[in-house]
Image 1 (cartoon, one colour):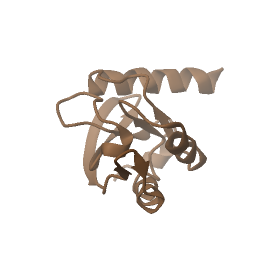
Image 2: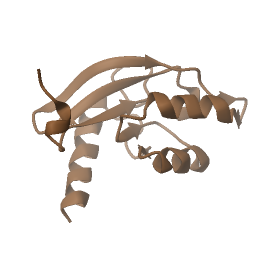
Image 3: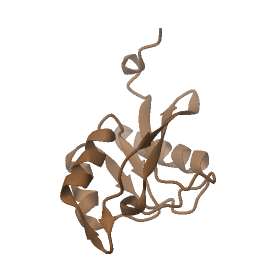
Image 4: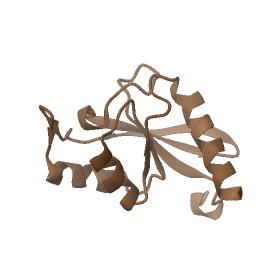
Length: 124
């Protein structure tokens, strides 16, 4: 049995996607998030986590957002096509870095780029 906590460089990353291999979904519109593990050995898909999207016609339901944050609590990052400042701050407060820098990029390549950037920042 492998303990992912034994290697601090291995982390979980959530992706908001329509399932077409791209980071192509707005945080507030996601009904699920694809969870990946990123580490020195590469990128590995783990699971899909179902949630109830919280954005309702431009307004967010705070209770639903908190449920989503709890569902992603073990993730260090969240790649999305777009995320508002409020949800982005709340996610960061929970230890989840939400980024839209890789919007419409290929999922695994985007995760690799984010992971490398994170390692560079931690080392510097």
